[in-house]
Image (cartoon, rainbow over all chains, first blue to last red; front, side):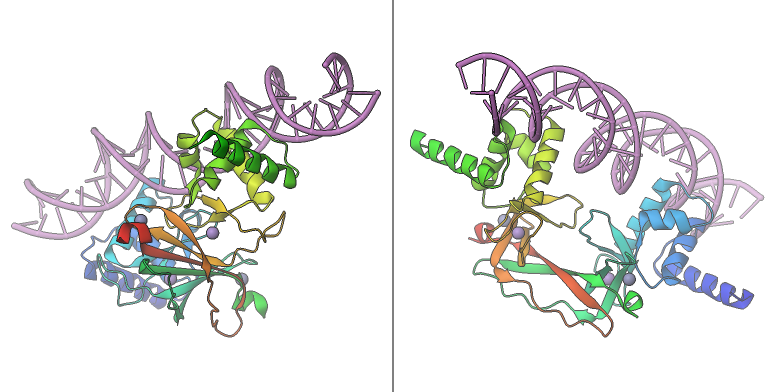
Length: 147
Length: 147
DNA sequence: TAGATAAAAGCAACACGGTTGCAAAATAAA
DNA sequence: TTTATTTTGCAACCGTGTTGCTTTTATCTA
Ligand SMILES: [Mn+2]
Ligand SMILES: [Mn+2]
Ligand SMILES: [Zn+2]
Ligand SMILES: [Zn+2]
């Protein structure tokens, strides 16, 4: 990575934090940067591993929660009981998520992807049930692993 | 509950266990009975609470795992990181689950229901992705809470 | 029906993911 | 630069689930 590219990402990250009225700290910068560099989702554990500098576990948890609250990232439900996080699209904001895409978990590389272009389907519920939110998680083999 | 009804359920439970080549024990009978008496899903904690007699936590966990292995119950993914279980339909068997229905989590009573008649929809994935399994969880207000 | 054998239950100890309260450090505002 | 406000790190804790091992229970067979 070139020096200028690095400066750019750094500036981009600071900008994004300020836009969300968050003070710019080392851990927030680093964690946000990890999300920007990555096309898949990240779990708490992944972040601890990839953040070169060591942040306290608690700091990572709180940072993730803050990002969720601000509409910067969203959580992804998985069958294996671990919470994963991925960047939101621009339409999300504090207290108001608008993520209507489905998620894909690869059984080979174990990565989780937001399929932003695949909208959650309409579900025809039995009489009496009222839907407020639909989560779709598809499991299988991802693009990268299939080629 | 009448005495004869109680005897019937007890017999039914023993029958079901034998059919799955499981030895008939107090904890298995009691836990299976809880599932039969209940139209929603149960989490480990619910079972510990509702089983009048006290079984060791480990026994409950192992019993649930055994039932899953035998195709008697299936797990339901939830956003809140806790595993819930519900009875399978008859088509499921040891090592071979066939649960293609969607699940509904009520935001009011917090119960989880198998909507056995609502089949998981076909999802149109981008080129390169191959689906092996689709999980749909709908969140909202359930039939009971809506009336 | 009693004894042998196999299976399950109970117990203790642990691993892991996540949370809470509080003091120290860092950030933002003045 | 000083002050007020946030955020961090630490320690301690909780809930959920697991593993190894011993005792108890269920099943099979004589
Ligand atoms: Mn997503
Ligand atoms: Mn179900
Ligand atoms: Zn893959
Ligand atoms: Zn309800």
